[in-house]
Image 1 (cartoon, helix red, strand yellow):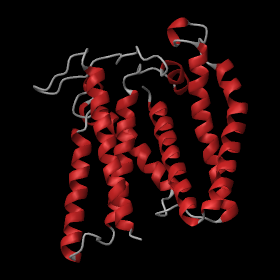
Image 2 (tube, one colour; image 1 turned 90 degrees about the vertical axis):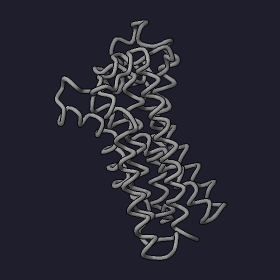
Image 3 (cartoon, helix red, strand yellow; image 1 turned 120 degrees about the vertical axis):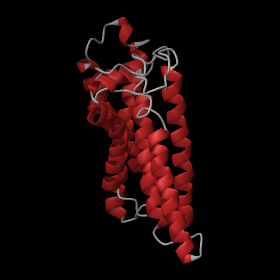
Image 4 (cartoon, rainbow, N blue to C red; image 1 turned 30 degrees about the horizontal axis):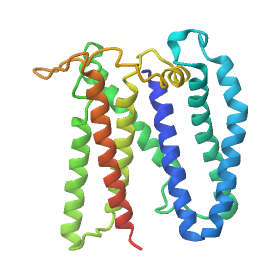
Length: 260
């Protein structure tokens, strides 16, 4: 998977999270306003989908090749989903601008997206440190390095709690937030690495609907640690899923530390 694809999908994932959090914020503010938000949300998604999906479909490379997807219908569904998510974000931002209702926890869409994208790009840092010959090795493409980030977060928060004498330590929620979004970005990279390295973002929309796709290449060994090519997909998906669960737990701690 190329770098642009990782960035696009990491940002799309953050978009979905941000939109859900904002809907929850509107619900806390005024239940009646939630209906109005849903109108903006749906309108944005429908308009962008109506305009962009036909363009993406007819511009899709080699769209007549049977190996690209299980069916044209499946590819259109995948493209519609992504376009609707991006359009719904535009509708949500328009609603936020008109009403002034802030997202619960004051999550910055710019900083949040930047953290998520940084996490999505970090697995490819093995090229910088180890060279291209050891790219896609099992240390960088696993949950081993991200867990070091989690460990650092836990130690830092523990120090804050010890100083404050309370589980609601000042500033702890920021560290939970940063670590969670970083892990989600890292997980998105591992999920997408089951697709070919030379694929572009549009191509992935076609391949994603084919459940028979497997990791195109194996993972490079590092020392005694080795994973067979057959087990590469299980390794990537398993570690990515583990990171998602840890990120969900950290987000839970984030909102808990915000207090009432």
